[in-house]
Length: 263
Image (cartoon, rainbow, N blue to C red; front, side):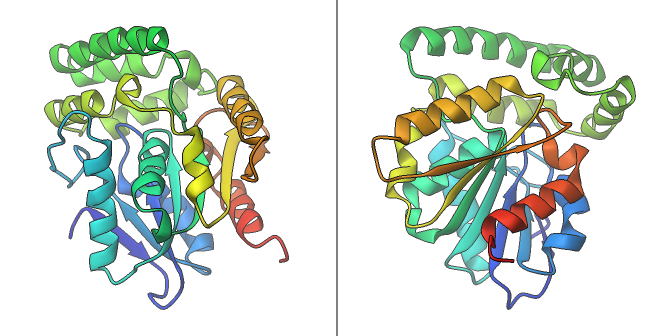
């Protein structure tokens, strides 16, 4: 299965990593020297990315969740820790929704729980359609240049932005577009209450400079305040949206401290 990278002793508890839109299983490579000492790390390509050519229905959240759980189960793991970044975090929420007993913990990095109103969803649908059209009709390097100018990536330096453009331009635009539209935030249900059905802890890691996702996480915590469910928010200093890429060692250490607070 070329859509999967594995690191660490297979007898250790499994930890599954889901990358963001236009990412790849290799995005987690820099975390592996630390995390693979404690967990058997499984990094997968999401549908439409890298070596995973699975076409998704619309919406495609359940199919994405099933694809991932099936692959991890085939490797021999019935339960696993789950880490998801951005789109990978939104798909992780759907794994939590459809397969709650499979999770030993859920860690979301800069991931949206879902829009609340029909107006927000309509606006997002229009925005996503515009981006999807650009993705097909523009040369990919030009599209990537525009994509990484979005406010959520404001903390990137010009050099970091260029490195991402070079890294991402090997993707297949048609497959990316299909995944992008099938997993549009406009199609996602509000997943804030999914955490209440989990038999395991939930964590949200946000960057100090990513004010939008810090606010989303804090709003989510308030939403859960009336229940016995906890979402632990952990903020990492000096970074924005893509924390694990900018500060892999800090992210790894923080993840370990969240999962093993006694150490």
